[in-house]
Every structure is written in C-alpha cells, then in structure tokens.
Length: 309
Image (cartoon, rainbow, N blue to C red):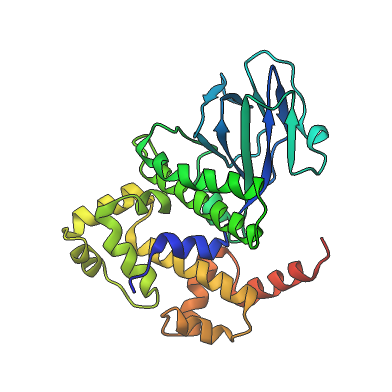
C-alpha cells in the first residue's frame, strides 16, 4: 500500500479531534470565549452567527453548514448580531456539554478541539494559519453535511457506541477541514502542508515518506515527478520552503526525535534505521538540526517527562 504522507504526519503529531458539545440559542445573544489552549473547531448546524476573532478588523458571518478552525491562541466572540453585549461563555457552560440560551430555537452550534502531541504537534500547528473558515457553499464543504448531521444525531439520541462514533466523526471532520484548506485558492505559507497540496510533487513525497532511510537522490525524485532536476527542485522549494533533500533530512530528524524520546534503542540502531552509515554521521546531522547530540537530547527529554507538571 502506497504511503500517504498526510496521514503519516497526522499520525506522527498524534492529532486527535474530540467533539466537546455545543449550544443552541434564540433571540439576541453573545458569548465571549477565552483564547483556547488547543486547536478549536466548530460548525453551525442551524441558523447563523457572527464570529469576531481578536486581532481581526471585523466579524465574519457564519451560516448553516459553515465550519471554522481556530489554531491561534486568540479570544473570540460568537453572537446573534454585532453589538450585543457578550457574557462569559465559561460561566454559561460551567462544565455542561449542551446549553440553551434564550428559547434556543434560532441557532445551533457544535464544537470541539484537537489534541496534539506536546512535542511533535508543533509540526502541524506551525503550518496552519491562525484561522480557517470553510463556507457551506464551497465544493469542499459538501462532505461536511452528512458528518455534521450525524454528530447532531449522536448528541440527540444516545446509542451504544455513541462516544466512539462521535470521536470518529470529529476526527473525520477535522481531516476534511484540512483537505478543504489544502484545496483553497488563497495564498498558503510555504511548508510541508502546501507541498502536500501540490499534485505534481506527490510522487516524491510518497517516496520519501514511504522509505525515509533510502538514500534518495534529487534525480530519482525528479524523475518520479516527471520533471527535470532543476524544475523539480525549484517547484519543491517554492512549495515546501526547503530543498527536497533538506525536507528528507528534516523528516528523518523528526523521526529520530520521536525514537530517542520514546524508545530505548541504542543511538546506533536509530541511526541505522534512518539510513545513516555510521553513528557519528547521524550524530553530526542530528546536532546540526536540533543543536544537541542524540544522547543529550534523549537525556533531556527523559528528565522533562519525569518532572511533574
């Protein structure tokens, strides 16, 4: 089975979406939410609301079926209309999974957050914009409709396996949001996510993620993409922000960090598994990228893990 780099990185960062509940509302209302510590997502399943994100010049209108993903630690306000005095959302919810504001007849919202590995999660968080809005009338949002309805149904009518079903639906919704972002026509910053959105580069990424230990050469990767070396190198750098072989080296180092943090294999075994001909060559490459030797990195990581939060 061909390696899927997108799934590879989501697994590596341990991205896990969790549906945490929602609320319904009627009449004039406004809720002020604190800056989230985790990536937050939400969807409008009935009616509309205005979303005012701190740092943005004006609020955005969200209609039924619209989905948002907030990755920045910014406070925000949801309201029936601009100008309504907000109340503290944390006081309203106070541990409840579902809340009705007013008569609860005009508006319904579901939301959740995304858990990431405390260390490797940075790989995903750093390539996402502060804010993603997927309107319901975009082609990418068609896939959301069934998932949103299923999430609503799971909340309304508890069934056996409902907790797991909701978790799987939330995970799928998160993946679809990222796919929609990949297919956006707007500008996207350089990085691995933008590179994954380039179909012409996909063969090279599949090769590097499928066998990161192999000593891939620029010519092999360019041939797989049906490009000349010069064209491929320029196109890859323009999308990923780094040269192809630098991308490969960086991915190897991410894998090495995970192995050193969580495994007990000798450094020489980690080096061999990642395609380095000697422990010293691996150690030099690792220190060049991370600033620490493999043994120092492992020692520090274990000390952090053993220190109470």
